[in-house]
Image (cartoon, rainbow over all chains, first blue to last red; front, side, top):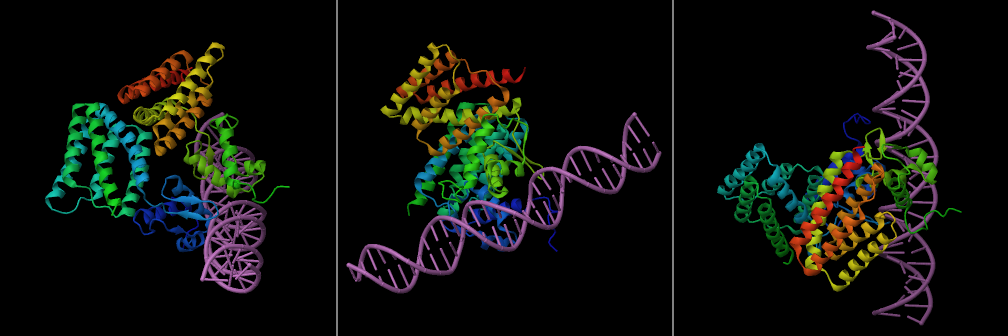
Amino acid sequence: MTPPTPLHLSLAGQAVDVLREQVLTGEIPPGSRVNEVEVAQKLGISRGPLREAIRHLASEGLLQLVPHRGAFVPDADSDEVKALFELRAALECAAAELAASRRTDVDLVRLHEVSAASRSNYRTGQPFPYRLDLAFHQTLIDAARSPRIAEQVRLVQQRVVLLRSALDDDPPHQHASMDDHDELVKAIEDGDAARASTVMRRHLSRVCAQMLTSLNR
Amino acid sequence: MTPPTPLHLSLAGQAVDVLREQVLTGEIPPGSRVNEVEVAQKLGISRGPLREAIRHLASEGLLQLVPHRGAFVPDADSDEVKALFELRAALECAAAELAASRRTDVDLVRLHEVSAASRSNYRTGQPFPYRLDLAFHQTLIDAARSPRIAEQVRLVQQRVVLLRSALDDDPPHQHASMDDHDELVKAIEDGDAARASTVMRRHLSRVCAQMLTSLNR
DNA sequence: ACGTTGTCAACTGTCGACAGTTGGCAGTTT
DNA sequence: AAACTGCCAACTGTCGACAGTTGACAACGT
């Protein structure tokens, strides 16, 4: 029934995927603890691979390890939000600059596509899905063609997603975000690195400010 | 003789420290493989904790994991150097800006101290010790007061150290670096964020360029 | 009643052994 | 001689069990 290891991913790797999903969706709520034996049984694996999965997620910042106590889903506080967005700004502003000087025509097409998808979603009157916001930033990062920066941005954005689930944050104001995004695309299209960086910084500080208000209520 | 676990750090934690040292000093040369049973015996621990140590170092970028093959010390190539310095520039330029706006008087004193130590070392005619260069950047990062950025910078700098051992790089030109550092301190002292960022970028691209020349020989 | 101390269950840290996979080597075939 | 095939040793991936630590509860003393 259960093949030993013929699957493409090791048990530890599969456990990482499952656990990451559960942490990001809030299925394992912030502040709660991850019991090794319990989760191992639930996943049908032994503690060894599960421990490796836990350590891996900890290195991504999705879990906090406490010696002899276990792994906890990190809780949100305002200092953490600020520090995280400072890091995010450092990375994404740099990415915006690089994108402005390296973008190809395909990159521009993709950016316009994502932007159009957001506008079209806006007309439906539904709340702004994070998916579209993430897609935009992801597309921009790819246009920067800097693998290590992209890697770090992905990790930071993951942590932002976790913070949002912890805060049950309101979706970002779609209108303001769309305008920011369009302005970013324009700057990148023009190859104006300085302006791309400035707009990105303003965009992120706006999003950060909104998350901080969600925190205080 | 060997106490079970009364030490402050777990066996895995100790293994991380020992292995990190061995990787960074080149005692385990780039390109070579880490045999789990062999190293575990050498450290007097079992494979479990050692595996966790290996995974941890892999998450820091000091080892590369290949499924069913093991862990390897990453080798240096020019693309990797460029990508890494793009990330480093993104982080340290941001840190320089933040330092310019947040630095306290103690920060300035410390920066001047490190700078003076470099000058004093220069007069001895000895090669520029990386230690002093690292100390300067470390001090600057601390002045930025952004814990997450500091954390990432530390990881990146660690990888740079590894690259240097892989390239048996010449020490950076102390004279040029000292001038850059002094200019940085001045900009931070003046609270001139834009200039601090610019100088940092120029400094890093200079260091990067030199590493690239070391690579091609 | 409150603080203190001793005990205990639950959990993490660690270990040794087994199973599966990988890369290489020897033997065979053309 | 070169290429292919099958086997084998070495190593990683995984497991179950034991040892040590932690936090909490209960019993005791003040």
